[in-house]
Amino acid sequence: MVDESERAPSPEETLRLIERQRADTVRQLRGNPLLQYVPWGVAWAIGFTAYFLHYGLDGTPYAPITEAQALATLMGAQLVAGAVAAYGITKQSAQTRGDNSARGTMYGYTWFAGFLLMSVIAIRISPMLPPAEAGLVWAGASLLVVGILYMAGGAIWLDWRMFFVGAWVVAVDASGVLLGPGWHALLTAVLLGGGFIAAGLWFRRRP
Amino acid sequence: MTAEGSLPELDPVIHAQARLRVVSALNTLADGNEMAFPALKELLGMTAGNLSVHLTKLEDAGYVQITKTHKGRTPVTYVSLTKRGRLAFDDYTRAIRALLDTAGGN
Image 1 (tube, rainbow over the protein chains, first blue to last red):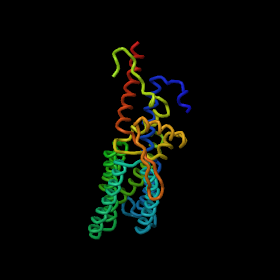
Image 2 (image 1 turned 120 degrees about the horizontal axis):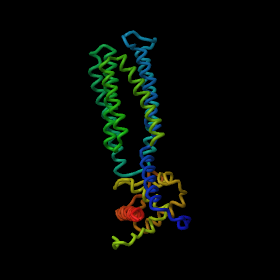
Image 3 (image 1 turned 120 degrees about the vertical axis):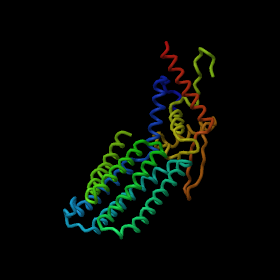
């Protein structure tokens, strides 16, 4: 084999080689950030822009988009994003077997449980509210689940970037809910939609 | 451990660059995790044949464990570092650092 005839690398080169291999491995096991962040960014940018145009900042719609159309736009975009993300997760989790995959499985079910409970609460509460406030409960609670699970994911995989992405979601969601439905949709479309697209591209460039 | 003043011996099984990369990659996984053969191949950019040869040498030394199994009907091979392999890698990096210190100290 070729390796036996290679020139012996210096200790510095050897340590650099080990470190580079470690970093490459971490990056590959973490999965492709373009598949993890960008699809959600695009979905929220489109979906919440539709909601923003429907609500308007002062309660007057900016475009003739009904609530049902805005909901369909957001849900459709999120379905596409979910499919792309699921493809990425499947590819990523096929790489290893063991405690890592058990972690991933439990984490996956946690997402499911979070959205299930959030939906139960919103279904119970939203009929008692005016339509715009009911929409805010759905959107605000969904992003609560997203933000917290990103922060928890950061803790599970010791990934500070994922943790800060989650903290960013929580901060934007809190500000939006305080300001009202129109602002929440605007902030989510721009800061989370645009933010996730930017994060995906940035994490790809600087792994 | 080496006697004072002498240079540490480098483990020849790990010292070959290709195998050092294999072991470094597998050492990144926490204990209790295995990497699928195709993922390791893609990560290292080696051919399947070349990687197999190196894995066999590492397996013969007791440094890696190779598990062949099935996922549905597709055969899958998983590779992991053994306890002995982890120790050998730790010893190797320690020896390299010692060499570096010796070189830097002169």
